[in-house]
Amino acid sequence: MEDFKRKAILDDLAGFFGSQRVAVKTLPDGKVAFRIDFVPLPPGCSPPDTTVLLQYGNESEPPQVLVKQGIKLKTGAIPRSTSALTVDGEPWISFSANFAYDSSRSVVQYVLGKLGRFARPD
Image 1 (cartoon, one colour):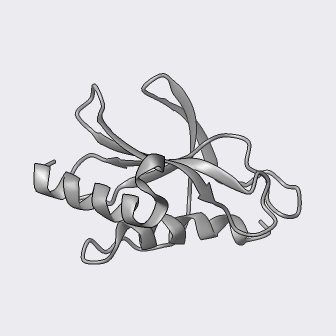
Image 2 (image 1 turned 120 degrees about the horizontal axis):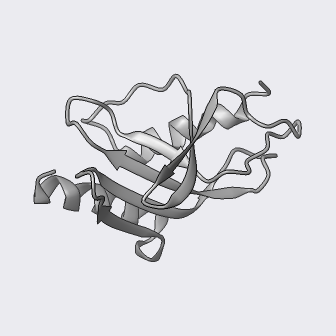
């Protein structure tokens, strides 16, 4: 990822979530990962917030949004269509959500849109 894109994404995330809650790292596989702590989940979810890992790999693909394990929906159910994986030694889950990525829009909107998937009762 080019430095100016990395900085623009970091600035966008830090501007919304706060610079103390956002960090960026290049992973051993070359992907760039933005870690965002205390991202709010939809009302009623447990816990009320999570850590998000936003991974950029191939520039022709949308970034992958991962969350920490242990999320429950407001019904108390565990979300379906999730997969456990490990990134840089940490456990995460990937999940399916129908929210299109548009590189001309704020990445914050994309992250929050993807997390909106947890508002569905499953």
